[in-house]
Image 1 (cartoon, one colour):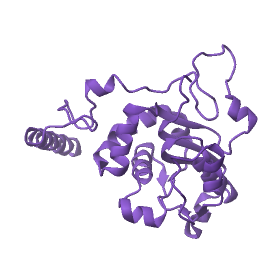
Image 2 (cartoon, helix red, strand yellow; image 1 turned 135 degrees about the vertical axis):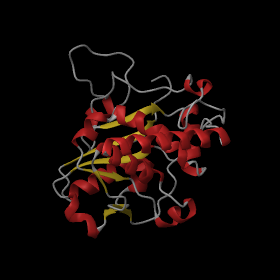
Image 3 (tube, helix red, strand yellow; image 1 turned 90 degrees about the horizontal axis):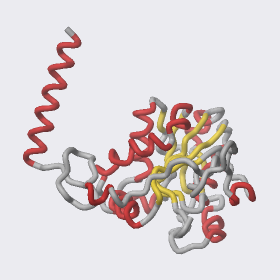
Length: 254
Protein backbone atom coordinates (compact mmCIF):
# COMPACT_ATOMS: atom_id res chain seq x y z
CA UNK A 1 0.00 0.00 0.00
CA UNK A 2 2.71 2.46 1.00
CA UNK A 3 4.76 1.68 -2.14
CA UNK A 4 1.69 2.21 -4.34
CA UNK A 5 0.98 5.56 -2.68
CA UNK A 6 4.63 6.54 -3.12
CA UNK A 7 4.51 5.68 -6.84
CA UNK A 8 1.33 7.72 -7.28
CA UNK A 9 2.92 10.63 -5.41
CA UNK A 10 6.04 10.49 -7.60
CA UNK A 11 3.90 10.34 -10.74
CA UNK A 12 1.96 13.44 -9.65
CA UNK A 13 5.23 15.28 -8.97
CA UNK A 14 6.54 14.33 -12.41
CA UNK A 15 3.37 15.63 -14.10
CA UNK A 16 3.58 18.83 -12.06
CA UNK A 17 7.23 19.35 -13.05
CA UNK A 18 6.39 18.82 -16.71
CA UNK A 19 3.56 21.37 -16.48
CA UNK A 20 5.82 23.93 -14.80
CA UNK A 21 8.58 23.34 -17.35
CA UNK A 22 6.09 23.82 -20.19
CA UNK A 23 5.00 27.19 -18.80
CA UNK A 24 8.42 28.26 -17.51
CA UNK A 25 11.15 26.38 -19.42
CA UNK A 26 14.22 25.69 -17.25
CA UNK A 27 17.07 28.08 -17.99
CA UNK A 28 20.78 28.05 -17.33
CA UNK A 29 21.55 30.09 -14.21
CA UNK A 30 24.48 31.77 -15.98
CA UNK A 31 23.53 32.38 -19.60
CA UNK A 32 19.74 32.21 -19.41
CA UNK A 33 19.63 29.67 -22.26
CA UNK A 34 16.88 27.04 -22.15
CA UNK A 35 18.23 23.73 -20.81
CA UNK A 36 16.89 20.21 -20.44
CA UNK A 37 16.04 20.35 -16.74
CA UNK A 38 16.04 22.64 -13.73
CA UNK A 39 19.52 23.08 -12.30
CA UNK A 40 21.30 22.25 -15.55
CA UNK A 41 24.05 24.39 -17.05
CA UNK A 42 24.07 25.26 -20.75
CA UNK A 43 26.74 23.58 -22.92
CA UNK A 44 28.19 27.00 -23.76
CA UNK A 45 28.85 27.57 -20.05
CA UNK A 46 29.78 23.99 -19.17
CA UNK A 47 32.75 24.05 -21.51
CA UNK A 48 34.26 27.01 -19.63
CA UNK A 49 33.95 25.58 -16.10
CA UNK A 50 37.19 24.25 -14.60
CA UNK A 51 36.64 21.52 -12.02
CA UNK A 52 39.28 20.77 -9.39
CA UNK A 53 40.44 17.18 -9.09
CA UNK A 54 43.54 15.32 -7.98
CA UNK A 55 46.39 16.03 -7.82
CA UNK A 56 45.82 18.72 -5.20
CA UNK A 57 47.28 19.78 -1.86
CA UNK A 58 46.28 17.26 0.80
CA UNK A 59 45.58 20.13 3.20
CA UNK A 60 44.18 23.19 1.41
CA UNK A 61 43.14 21.57 -1.88
CA UNK A 62 45.27 23.79 -4.11
CA UNK A 63 45.37 22.04 -7.51
CA UNK A 64 48.74 20.84 -8.79
CA UNK A 65 49.67 20.62 -12.43
CA UNK A 66 51.55 17.36 -11.97
CA UNK A 67 51.33 14.54 -9.45
CA UNK A 68 54.20 13.17 -7.40
CA UNK A 69 53.84 9.41 -7.56
CA UNK A 70 53.57 7.63 -4.24
CA UNK A 71 53.73 10.78 -2.11
CA UNK A 72 51.06 12.79 -0.31
CA UNK A 73 51.43 16.25 -1.76
CA UNK A 74 51.35 19.42 0.30
CA UNK A 75 51.70 22.91 -1.16
CA UNK A 76 54.49 25.28 -0.09
CA UNK A 77 52.08 27.57 1.79
CA UNK A 78 50.75 24.72 3.97
CA UNK A 79 54.28 23.44 4.64
CA UNK A 80 55.33 26.93 5.70
CA UNK A 81 52.33 27.44 7.97
CA UNK A 82 49.89 24.61 8.60
CA UNK A 83 46.28 25.86 8.53
CA UNK A 84 44.06 25.11 11.54
CA UNK A 85 41.65 23.02 9.49
CA UNK A 86 42.26 19.36 8.64
CA UNK A 87 41.49 19.82 4.96
CA UNK A 88 39.81 22.22 2.54
CA UNK A 89 38.22 21.29 -0.75
CA UNK A 90 36.55 23.24 -3.55
CA UNK A 91 34.65 22.09 -6.61
CA UNK A 92 35.77 24.75 -9.10
CA UNK A 93 38.62 27.06 -9.95
CA UNK A 94 37.52 30.64 -9.25
CA UNK A 95 37.78 32.28 -12.67
CA UNK A 96 35.58 34.30 -15.02
CA UNK A 97 33.14 31.43 -15.60
CA UNK A 98 32.63 30.41 -11.96
CA UNK A 99 32.77 34.01 -10.71
CA UNK A 100 29.74 34.91 -12.82
CA UNK A 101 27.76 31.98 -11.42
CA UNK A 102 28.73 32.65 -7.82
CA UNK A 103 28.16 36.42 -7.87
CA UNK A 104 24.67 35.95 -9.32
CA UNK A 105 23.92 33.48 -6.53
CA UNK A 106 25.54 35.67 -3.88
CA UNK A 107 24.25 39.11 -4.84
CA UNK A 108 21.61 38.56 -7.53
CA UNK A 109 18.93 36.72 -5.55
CA UNK A 110 19.43 33.64 -7.71
CA UNK A 111 18.88 31.12 -4.94
CA UNK A 112 17.77 28.56 -7.50
CA UNK A 113 21.46 28.29 -8.44
CA UNK A 114 22.28 26.58 -5.13
CA UNK A 115 21.14 23.09 -6.23
CA UNK A 116 23.49 23.40 -9.21
CA UNK A 117 26.49 23.71 -6.90
CA UNK A 118 25.55 21.03 -4.36
CA UNK A 119 26.41 17.88 -6.40
CA UNK A 120 29.75 19.44 -7.37
CA UNK A 121 30.54 20.25 -3.75
CA UNK A 122 29.45 16.78 -2.62
CA UNK A 123 31.86 15.18 -5.06
CA UNK A 124 34.77 17.35 -3.94
CA UNK A 125 34.02 16.97 -0.21
CA UNK A 126 32.65 13.43 -0.11
CA UNK A 127 35.15 12.22 2.52
CA UNK A 128 34.65 15.10 4.94
CA UNK A 129 30.88 15.07 4.47
CA UNK A 130 30.74 11.33 5.18
CA UNK A 131 32.41 11.92 8.57
CA UNK A 132 30.74 15.23 9.49
CA UNK A 133 28.75 15.65 12.68
CA UNK A 134 27.93 19.30 12.03
CA UNK A 135 27.86 21.55 8.98
CA UNK A 136 28.29 25.22 9.77
CA UNK A 137 28.32 28.21 7.38
CA UNK A 138 30.70 31.16 7.51
CA UNK A 139 28.48 33.93 8.95
CA UNK A 140 27.62 37.36 7.60
CA UNK A 141 27.59 40.42 9.83
CA UNK A 142 24.00 41.39 10.65
CA UNK A 143 24.17 44.62 8.63
CA UNK A 144 25.36 42.77 5.54
CA UNK A 145 22.73 40.10 6.14
CA UNK A 146 19.97 42.72 6.26
CA UNK A 147 21.24 44.26 3.02
CA UNK A 148 21.57 40.92 1.19
CA UNK A 149 18.54 39.26 2.88
CA UNK A 150 20.20 35.84 3.01
CA UNK A 151 23.55 34.22 3.73
CA UNK A 152 24.64 32.28 0.66
CA UNK A 153 26.91 30.05 2.77
CA UNK A 154 23.98 29.11 5.02
CA UNK A 155 21.88 28.11 2.00
CA UNK A 156 24.66 25.80 0.82
CA UNK A 157 25.26 24.42 4.32
CA UNK A 158 21.58 23.57 4.80
CA UNK A 159 21.33 21.71 1.48
CA UNK A 160 24.60 19.83 2.04
CA UNK A 161 23.58 18.83 5.57
CA UNK A 162 20.21 17.54 4.43
CA UNK A 163 21.81 15.32 1.79
CA UNK A 164 24.69 14.21 4.03
CA UNK A 165 22.44 13.38 6.98
CA UNK A 166 24.36 15.75 9.25
CA UNK A 167 23.08 18.52 11.50
CA UNK A 168 23.28 22.12 10.28
CA UNK A 169 23.59 25.00 12.75
CA UNK A 170 23.31 28.17 10.61
CA UNK A 171 23.98 30.57 13.51
CA UNK A 172 26.71 28.58 15.29
CA UNK A 173 29.22 31.29 14.39
CA UNK A 174 28.58 35.03 14.57
CA UNK A 175 30.56 37.99 13.27
CA UNK A 176 31.39 40.19 16.22
CA UNK A 177 32.24 43.15 14.02
CA UNK A 178 31.67 44.28 10.47
CA UNK A 179 34.85 43.59 8.50
CA UNK A 180 35.94 45.37 5.35
CA UNK A 181 35.30 43.60 2.04
CA UNK A 182 38.21 41.27 1.40
CA UNK A 183 38.32 41.62 -2.38
CA UNK A 184 40.85 44.47 -2.60
CA UNK A 185 43.07 43.32 0.27
CA UNK A 186 46.37 41.45 0.02
CA UNK A 187 47.21 38.26 1.91
CA UNK A 188 48.40 39.87 5.16
CA UNK A 189 45.65 42.49 5.16
CA UNK A 190 42.99 39.80 4.75
CA UNK A 191 44.26 37.98 7.83
CA UNK A 192 44.40 41.20 9.88
CA UNK A 193 40.92 42.12 8.70
CA UNK A 194 39.26 38.97 10.09
CA UNK A 195 41.39 38.47 13.21
CA UNK A 196 39.10 37.87 16.22
CA UNK A 197 36.11 38.79 14.06
CA UNK A 198 34.17 35.60 14.86
CA UNK A 199 32.71 33.98 17.95
CA UNK A 200 30.70 30.86 18.74
CA UNK A 201 27.12 31.67 19.71
CA UNK A 202 26.81 30.80 23.44
CA UNK A 203 23.59 28.90 22.73
CA UNK A 204 25.47 26.40 20.54
CA UNK A 205 28.79 26.00 22.37
CA UNK A 206 27.88 22.63 23.91
CA UNK A 207 26.70 21.30 20.54
CA UNK A 208 30.11 21.98 18.97
CA UNK A 209 32.33 20.43 21.64
CA UNK A 210 33.87 17.16 20.46
CA UNK A 211 32.24 17.31 17.02
CA UNK A 212 33.71 16.98 13.53
CA UNK A 213 32.69 20.16 11.72
CA UNK A 214 32.53 20.98 8.02
CA UNK A 215 32.71 24.74 7.49
CA UNK A 216 30.96 25.97 4.33
CA UNK A 217 31.52 29.13 2.27
CA UNK A 218 31.26 30.17 -1.36
CA UNK A 219 34.90 30.98 -2.24
CA UNK A 220 38.29 30.10 -0.72
CA UNK A 221 40.78 32.85 -1.59
CA UNK A 222 43.69 33.02 0.85
CA UNK A 223 42.03 30.96 3.58
CA UNK A 224 42.00 33.91 5.98
CA UNK A 225 38.28 33.83 6.76
CA UNK A 226 38.00 30.05 6.84
CA UNK A 227 41.14 29.77 8.96
CA UNK A 228 39.86 32.28 11.51
CA UNK A 229 36.48 30.52 11.69
CA UNK A 230 38.24 27.16 12.12
CA UNK A 231 40.36 28.55 14.95
CA UNK A 232 37.23 29.88 16.65
CA UNK A 233 35.49 26.49 16.43
CA UNK A 234 38.56 24.62 17.69
CA UNK A 235 38.86 26.94 20.68
CA UNK A 236 35.22 26.14 21.42
CA UNK A 237 36.10 22.44 21.59
CA UNK A 238 35.42 21.13 18.09
CA UNK A 239 37.31 17.86 17.51
CA UNK A 240 38.34 18.90 14.00
CA UNK A 241 37.32 21.31 11.27
CA UNK A 242 37.30 20.83 7.50
CA UNK A 243 36.21 23.38 4.89
CA UNK A 244 34.18 23.07 1.69
CA UNK A 245 33.54 25.80 -0.89
CA UNK A 246 32.11 26.12 -4.36
CA UNK A 247 35.36 27.52 -5.75
CA UNK A 248 38.88 28.54 -4.79
CA UNK A 249 41.29 31.08 -6.17
CA UNK A 250 44.28 29.77 -8.10
CA UNK A 251 47.24 31.91 -9.09
CA UNK A 252 47.53 32.73 -12.77
CA UNK A 253 49.55 30.02 -14.42
CA UNK A 254 49.16 27.80 -11.33
